[in-house]
Image 1 (cartoon, rainbow, N blue to C red):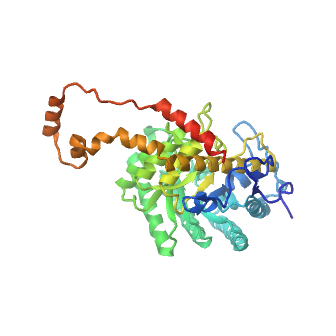
Image 2: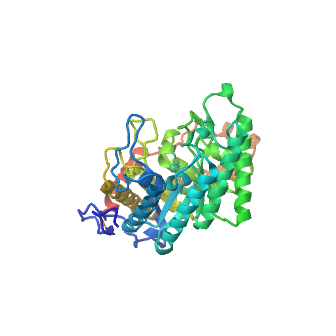
Image 3: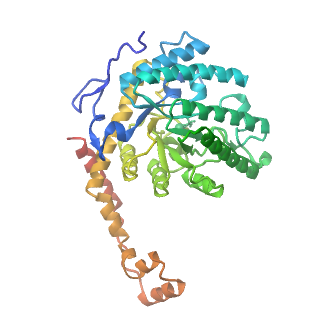
Length: 441
Ligand code: XUL
Ligand code: CO
């Protein structure tokens, strides 16, 4: 049976195509950085938004019209697996991602939950035998059920900590079973509402203990996927412990976990933290810890996590600039942690949304590649910092000076007259020119 009858195979048709079910810029075979776009960009579909999400919001019920709406429980879970592999194949997407809870219903009783999971994971594994779509990452949902009200590994109740450990243990086993390339830890409810009732030191120590045990268990079962931590500053808790990349870096170094994790960076989480997407990617990259990306975008008019499909070409360009400079994402990829709007309730919208996102990132890739080839920003930046390549600047960088020498230098030189313009407006205009040109051939 077919779940998506309106759509056959989504193919690359080029910028002149008007076919809403075709790629205009994402050409899986086109070469980028010595690889095909498909290999370099490693797009993934997120199971929760695309197959489990129903379009509910805090004010109203789900709106999504899906071909499996009439089903419930395990029958629904199975239909979603069937539908998902049809979707992956039609979109020709190389990866997908899921939380345990997305694929199989969670029961109150953990052994029942695991039984459900085993059945669905076996079914997924079967589909994966004949599908080209692989698992980019899996994770455990430790935020939906009421037991997680005060967190999972940072909960004040040790039984909840143990329950969380059991879920992640199972998640690591599932990851190994399905050949996942990464395993994600998003903090969920790891944070706090008020310090009036919180032992922050114990919660952070416990979170680190949890991560060390997860690492040990993955090693024990021979699951060598990359561990990814996904920062987010707020929502659902008021203050999340993995606030942003800088906070995550400090935490990982404080607890000796810096070699165990890389970052999974989500655009909308970056903007909620008061940063740009590229800021977070850049900071992770210069620390050698850019692991994967949750590709979406927020809304400048709204202060919450809207998880929109990414269509902002400035953002995709500056993101791909970082990713190309990082020489790709290694075992990571570009996962659409994005949902169609509540008013986009048809199954066709699921295709349109992914096509829009993939094309937007493909445009970003083409523009970023040209910017880098022409060294537009790199040359400008190198010139801006030239004073560190000679004289006193070189001494600073090479560690050949101290406050005595620097002070003597400052006293000698008189007024500073050699500051140069940062040329921000001109650089933005150049970026516009590249954006317009790179998509025209
Ligand atoms: C929530 C979020 C999660 C993680 C995986 O904001 O981004 O879906 O990506 O748990
Ligand atoms: Co995410």
